[in-house]
Amino acid sequence: MKNALLATSALIALTLPAHAADPDLLVFDWAGFEEPGLFTSYTEKHGDGPSYTFYGDDDEAYQKLASGFKADTAHPCSQMVSKYRDAGLIEPWDVTKIPEFANIDPKFLKSPIFQDDTGVWFIPTDWGATAVAYNPEEVPAEDVASLNVFLNADYEGRISLPDSSDDVWALAYLATGVTDWTEVSQEQFDAAAAWLREAHKNVQSYWADPSEQAQTMASGEVLISWSWNDGVTYLRDDDYPVAFQREATEGSSTFFCGFVNLKDGPGSEEKLYDFINAWLAPSSGPALKDAIGYGHTNTKAMELISDEELDVAGVGPIDAPILAQTPNDPELREKQLAEFEKIKAGY
Picture (cartoon, helix red, strand yellow):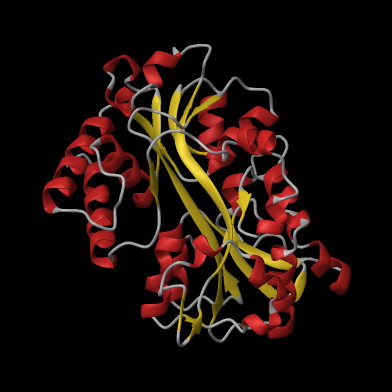
């Protein structure tokens, strides 16, 4: 992803069926995950990588699939899986065909939404962190010691937030003292919404993908962003000054994503399993870290990455509260999404 933030094709990739390759497998994925190192054995076996089409956020992907778009697999983050199941868009994986499934860290499968007596519905593959990215040449470290930096009038018009309901609510809950969003009262929801409305006054832009977020920071328009760690990776790869504050007083967030087996996929089921086995191969761990900065769910893959490398990527251990973006109440998530739309519109 070297120079990804300078690529003018990044926004086009979100709307076109990009990276056409093997016609027998269509992967519906986040832009940037067509990295060849993530499916090496697939390419070795079939002579080419799978075909890809891309999306910019989880809700966009779900809406497109719910409207009838057909692909063989998609790459949602954990909190979306219940929506896919409830809508009847996915079917269980046959884990007897996935040898490395046994090496997935059990903490990523701790939910009946992911696996139950009807099967395994989600193969977690990658995880990352969301925290405060900032330009250390212009923003003192003490200013980002608290998440309330997003309310600081000194940075009005120099702040960006993700155009992602899950990520902004993780920020707002943390900032108002909530570290577990599986149990949220109406009072806590209202406090987080009020905090987001205050932060909105300082927001220059809501970024749709890490390349866009990195571009706004590289240009100097934005000094502080609530950022996934891959955006920080892209900036560092291009020698822009950026620091990643995961240990603000109120904490930071983590998320994990993986693949679902879409019903009635147009391609080859055999090749779908070849793809997921390639992704779960231990060798994919370093490739994922190098290209995107994320950690891998396969414990064998993580053994190939040093603690120092994880710290540099922004996914090492920290001493601060963490809000894990695990599945939460679908009704709460829909309420958050609706409220976020109102906040962005200025209401």
